[in-house]
Length: 200
Image (tube, rainbow, N blue to C red):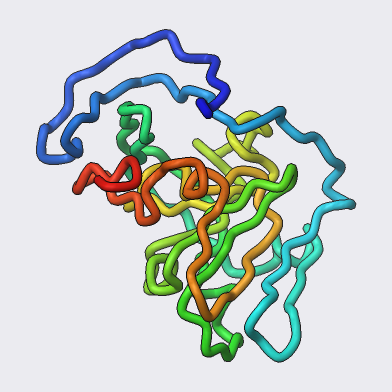
């Protein structure tokens, strides 16, 4: 199953090779790749929930989420379809903030989104300042085509792990493959190891 793609004109640019994982090329575009149609919902309807292997789920409305401590980060992102975009600027809430008061025995998480999209990771892949739930890109509200109102940002893994239209996390005691992981993509997704598909 191939992702839906548009908005890519193929403009490639030169960059320091040390910043580009093997098999990738750098683009100035920001291609739109999705597993399905772009959802559009009012912010009053939106909420973010942490559930699963915890005593009680935690949930935030849009206003509560925007009131949390936030930060702006500049990171390189890498898509499994072989494009990379350098020095992207995002603003949002660190997963460390969201998980600060959560006591759990879980070792894995499943991110879930509008439309039923899911992606799985070990919990330690999104803590220690490695992942954010972001709502701005380039100083502007995150456009729905790029995952707005919020998406997960896990820049050290391939971009399919940075779930668009994110609604929350399910903490799990056992690993379970998400959408693309169940359709042949690598369970981990490290671009520096070219972990694109099962067996890589």
